[in-house]
Length: 170
Image 1 (cartoon, one colour):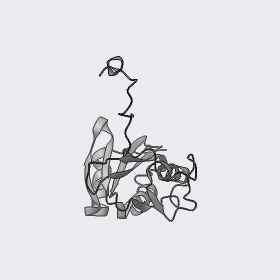
Image 2: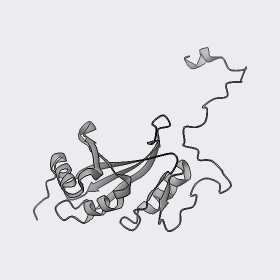
Image 3: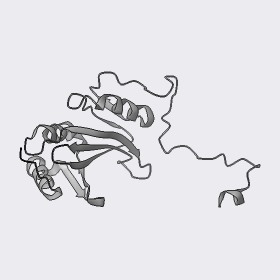
């Protein structure tokens, strides 16, 4: 059996040829191909990566969210880590969403393993995944009316008088 050989440059070129302007930017921190994609094309791009025989990126390693509160109209980011097991190739996709509408299509129909990962991302960041089969909280209380991983809350109570910052390296 011949082993697939994938390179960052080759995969990026394939994506650019197939999706054009939906591939917004790319970089390779620590030699990991990281591609920013148009969030409206996330399912098309991920489905292509999985089904294209020359790539065979068949495993979803991670799906998560990030909150960048100071990045206007790009406050939320959905991050996908995908893995071609045979070629031992990894790729990271990022799709940025505005805080006014943090919504993106679900990829559960492509990777079953995305189910709980999308639910966790919804639970902690409030990012909604359209067409998810059961988008409800998974770890937090149903009664919570906020999303705890958003950077909207002070880390400490500034009114505390019993705390001496000298003991905390400040």
